[in-house]
Amino acid sequence: MSRLTTASVPTVRRSARPGVPLRRIGRVLTGLWLPVLLLVLWWVLSARSTSPFFPPLSDILGETWNQWVVFGAWQNAVSSLRNLLLGYVLGAAIGIVGGSLLWRLRLLRTAANPLIYFLYVLPAPALLPAMIAIFGIGDLRQIALISFGAIWPTLLNTLDGMRGIDTVKFDTARALRLSSWRSYFTLVLPGAGPQIAAGLRASLTVGIILMVISEMVAARSGIGYFILQSQAEFAIKKMWTGIIVLALIGTLLNYLFVFVERLVLRWYYRSRALGGS
Amino acid sequence: MSIPVTTQTVLAVEDLRKIYNEGTDAANMAIDSVSFSVEKGEFVCIVGPSGAGKTTLLRCISGLAAPSSGSVTFEGKRLTDVPAQLGLVFQDYSRSLYPWYTNGRNVALPLAARGVPKGERAARVAEVLGNVGLGHVEKKYPWELSGGMQQRVAIARALSYRPELLLMDEPFASVDAQTRFDLEDLILKVRTELGITVVLVTHDIDEAIYLSDRIVVLSKNPSVVKEVVPVSLGESRDQVETRSSPEFLELRNHLLSLVMPHA
Figure 1 (cartoon, rainbow over the protein chains, first blue to last red):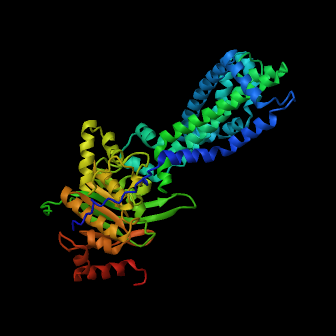
Figure 2: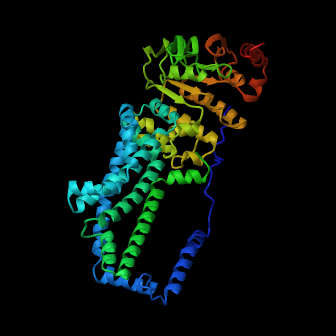
Figure 3: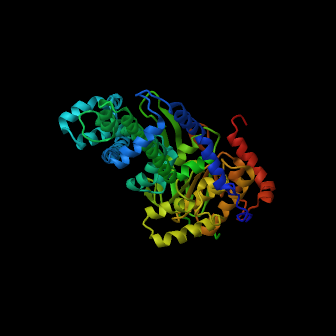
């Protein structure tokens, strides 16, 4: 009767990986060969270019250092990033709270559904003139536009993720007598976590696009302003430096996001890697 | 376990009926009329052919679903929600455990909800994991364990707040045969050690006989109680001996004739 084997715990172990750092470096390198090759090609092919539109890459990189570090254009990046951060955080928060409310209140959801899809498909840049009219020229208008665009991917993914949670998990919460708030924080939010993260990532992309666009219309600072201004001054080399800085920032933000996501949703990626639920 | 001198009814189901989509064209009667009661300390299995509304019945007697008519009384009170003194174990552990929490946190969830102080929780979690024969798995995640062990975690979670009644819905249907025998013996051991009342829903007649003091046999959809069969196999049971005893085989034949449609 008491044949309860417990010592031989057949847990799934993460495979012991002796050469972890080496293999990881190898993986990074295999992922990098194409970008590196293209950069080398760009460098070599543009080296003797005399076209005013395609200056040599070496010149562009030198100019980038001069413009963004020596001449103080970094202030444009600071103001862009500040607006992006404020707008994104605000939009993401509204998205998660709004998505949760729509999930909880069915009547509100049915009523708001057409409106949400209408706003979702509306290209946010089209609202720029309205934003200028409402908020005037300045950072507030930029922040408002970024957060407006960032709301929708997060909101829709939050709602969808919450609606997709297994009903057995809700039965379980009731059986364990978790209060509404407790089950929101212990079941609903973590359960929708992977999809909320996907929404947040899409919102970040939208936010970066809107950051640049809003700086290109009636603005006096920011990376977008810098790029457009340089082009207007026929300073093409300078324009390219702005684009490079923008690409670098976008890439860095994306990697930062993925890093945080992997940390927060460690359970999800690890259980998936094990082929579990 | 000593046989209680005065019986005390833990669960009473009276004339329970459940109709889905009542009052519409899609109305579907899952349960016609079911009555039975469970005394304190008893182990009762509910068996029936597939599609006999077993899960519906379990949802009604656990308070997860409201019956269309009739009543369910738990410890003298009519059910409106899942009572605090009821432990529930679902068939599919991977659907009922929360994969974002460690096993320890999963088991501690109902304790936190019941206001057990934080300092006490860890000790209770370790104790109840010991009860179900699990060692140190608190810091591991459910998906790092085998299926049988995950179901043990789910059982531990249902036992952590020391319920009066443990209600299980086909709890061993998702594990392999060997693990199934282990878990059957585990639940008998836990029941003896904690003096708990158990109601278990299953489609497996052998399992029902092996575990029960009484078996409630349901008919096909819409279900009624065909018969309540007492099982007098004694207190201690053994997978090999009990299952090959003449009494077991006799009960098996009787139950098969009740469950099989044309027998």
